[in-house]
Image (cartoon, rainbow, N blue to C red):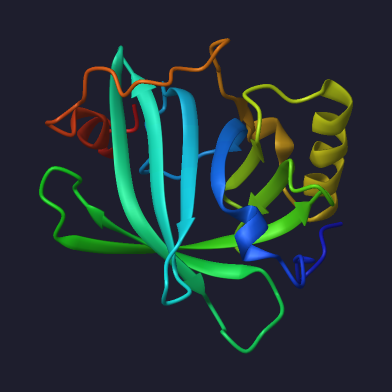
Length: 184
């Protein structure tokens, strides 16, 4: 039986959290490409305390990215509950889309993290490296199950070894976003 309220990390050190995170697995949001590989997020703390977010993925050999901003849902709370705002479509960013980003678990060295949201429809396992030890992965699956997630919906994200460092050809037309609307 799932808990009514999810347990969220308290006292997250935002400065330690900044940097690059590789997506190991996800129950993706509907706006994420379904065939994305080498998916990663880059976080940078801004002077005003918000976080610049750049999500990247490669789909059909082209790099797609979207930029947004994250901020504490309740600035007075110790809980790691954030809101993330992106503007869609990426080729003509006019529609704000806000989602929840709750840090459900992070290891003491800030090397891997479990991120979810209150509806339990989306889940991400992220790691500082492109690959995660299977034992740790299974521990994160157990934690997700404890929080009420159906981990059978989790999709492992393919990461090349080594991951691409250059940007590569860009999807400048936002084709991935249009495909995501069609459920592809």
